Image (cartoon, rainbow, N blue to C red; front, side, top):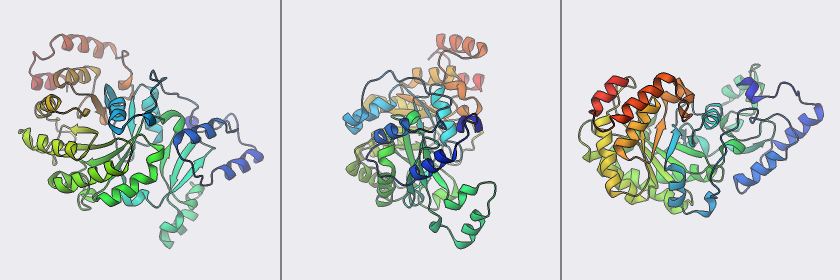
Amino acid sequence: FRHHQLNINHPPTPTMTATRKANTSEVDCDNVTNVTNLLKDASTPNSLQNPPQPLPSTSSVHLSSLSPQEAAHHLFCNSEILAPMVRASTTPLRTLALSYGASLVYTEELIDRSIVPTERIINTELGTIDYRTPKHCYSAKVQKRMANDKDNPDSKNGAVLLRIDPLVEQDKLIYQMGTGEGHLALDAANKVVNDVNGVDVNMGCPKKFSVTGGMGSALLSDVKRACDIISTLRRNLNKPVSAKIRLLDPDNPKPTLDFVRALIKAGANAIAIHGRIVGDESHTMARWETLIEVVRQLKQTESVPIIVNGDLYTRADIQEMKSRTGCDGVMLARPALYNICIFRKGEESKADGKKAKTETDTTNTMPISEFQASNH
């Protein structure tokens, strides 16, 4: 990624460096298109665009001309998505996933209170939009340590919490937030809404820091508060609002169905469902049987996009899940970390390709538990 980030064959001249320093101050731009045009015109050869480039878009639809629900269908239907992963779904992995064919990428979960105080910076040296936490937000002790960090001298100016590559991620980026209150969620969303294409609320994270703050999977047991967050965002934003949840019961679809339908009634434009319950370890097999039944029933009654997540390690897994559920898209987390090429359609390994052909022929005839066990 070092070579991907910096063009080492063209070191910056003093004049260029001075220009970049001037251009990395905070700029008030109304939307990502203006920033994209600015970065395209930048004289610097250094850019996150060297290489790779994402696959060219085949659509001429401008999301800004669509209603939030129309935009959600455009973004999520027939999608293959890089999931939000803490310390993983940052700029390098997101842009790499897009270059291999991902149709949509999520930021890592960023807490509402952490994004609000950031400063929005146009970084023409890297060709990015940076959200940087100003140094006055840190304690004196931390500021001193940052100032003495010789390995990362730029840290004295504060940490970059979110970095967006608008040339690569335009019309393909969802901001995921950790939040427990509607007004805090709205403050966070308003901070970044002009640089992203949708806002997602994390309702599945089981980690202690999230749950004790009333965020993540804590919302699964508080449908009233979860719906208030969704409705607050929908009333005030003109972009899609979605939620990522977990199954609420290991065997019974009804609790999950009731929760999802409440979110949709509150205004959610799309829902992603992870096929595990709170308490399941990542090495535990996803509960595909329950997940499939939930999605099947939702697709019979609801019109918003439904995304499936959990243990989709091969193209055969993806095809099987789409065929059995009729889901609108799939979301990949660890499978993408293990092999980012999974997003590249039609270029499976020979083994995976043979498996996909064989199992597609038996779709909906082999019990899903048997299919899952034979593949994992």
